Image (cartoon, rainbow, N blue to C red):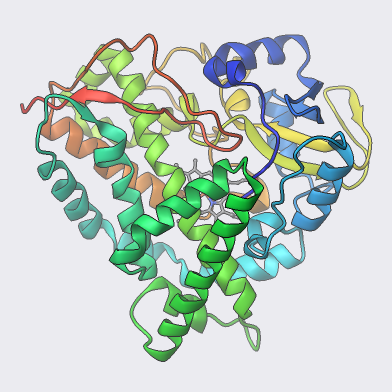
Length: 403
Ligand code: HEM
């Protein structure tokens, strides 16, 4: 998690596509000042963004990033803190540390383990839909899109059911933190819980991901206790705040394009393509991902000196007309592969297979069970959450009319 980081203003979040388009066409590599007064370099064209994501001169080491952020922020700004003990995970590392850690984690978080979850995800999804009491006015996020991935990752890891609400509260605070004290408290509570969870699994190994992470080896190498804690935390956070918005943003796009929904109802075999287009069109990881320049780089003819903060625009890149024709047209039949929603390069999302599986199952069940799905209220004034990381709706009210 990279809490406490400056974000663009509320208006930017609310009009993401238009604002990204403006940036792309006018100044694709642009120095901007965030609402907290921090200068960042924003990369918005597809080719630049993709290249930057794979550029080792752009680092992600948490401590170094924190130093650069602190140096860039005005003295009176809220500096926040994200290089916490929970931050020593692969997403905040550069090579070779990243290579080592990812290699170990991949031994536990395998494609086979993810695929083996399929029947279980189908059950969880169906049970959640069954449990909605009044289907005429449902906030799809709270009732379905959020609990689905949350339950899946909690079960994969072996998190106690009684602690899942606590976890939701901590993740929320850590991701959206504006209050330093609340952030510290949430980090400490979450860490204490991770320690407890890992200790339990050491005593009583089970057929779950935490046990597999504890047991993962690369020759003599294994994850240290601190690495285990941070990795489990990363997986839990990633499993909590992303797929929910893939489902939410995707269903919104389908509601706004009823002919696309009708095409899916007529042929649910289009679901995997639809999910790819959902990722391209309105991926859940907002504006971009943060890097700092280890040495000077040049993008789009603009030189960015060393020691600068760079935002690589994932949604801006995935909606670049140079790469995807008529990007503002949501079209589930287009070839959306190559989008940047899961990033690119060494940090390419480790959970992409799981996220796709969850979203495909969710969408297929919605299409098959509720072909007459419609919005409750107007879709014109949906509100987006104001967050530096997540691109998601505050709520999505729908009527789940049975077919
Ligand atoms: C990394 C997006 C779901 C685990 C990333 C990155 C992106 C991303 C953009 C790279 C960030 C960067 O380069 O700075 C997404 C999206 C998801 C999703 C859009 C859902 C639709 C998940 C899930 C998990 C997961 C469900 C695991 C449970 C990870 C991990 C990394 C990562 C561990 C770090 C990989 C590394 O640094 O090598 N994700 N993610 N993600 N994601 Fe996801």
